[in-house]
Length: 153
Image (cartoon, rainbow, N blue to C red; front, top):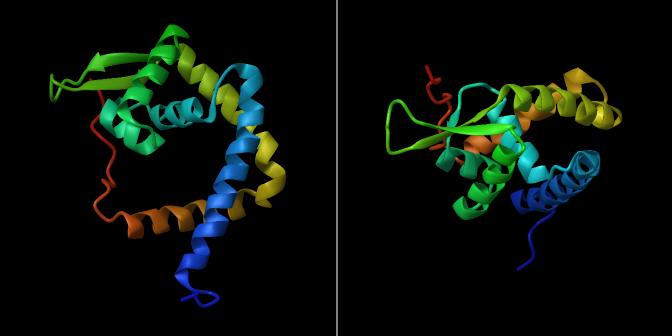
């Protein structure tokens, strides 16, 4: 049976297409810098300065743990990320941005924002869309933690 026009299933196609097109566009900005969209996702998550458990980074970056480990190894080799034992649970490892990683994230974020500026119609529209999408994620994944993980001391 076909879905009725306007049914919730209609949301999947444009969101998927938008994500793929946006990833391709951001990837074109990052490629000359030697970074992938997946690496960019990791840098953006770590940019909050809290340091995140590798399991959380994998989930937020939508990467399987093995793939994330290889990616973080590459970011460590570039001195963008470092790993630290979690002070709250010594069995866990947290990933953090290095000082160089912070500078690179800030520089690349400016490049990405400049490239995407024409798409968003202004900061207010971008923020509104971001809030709506974050709300959708919360509704789809109500068990997802909403509070950031504790900062490293």
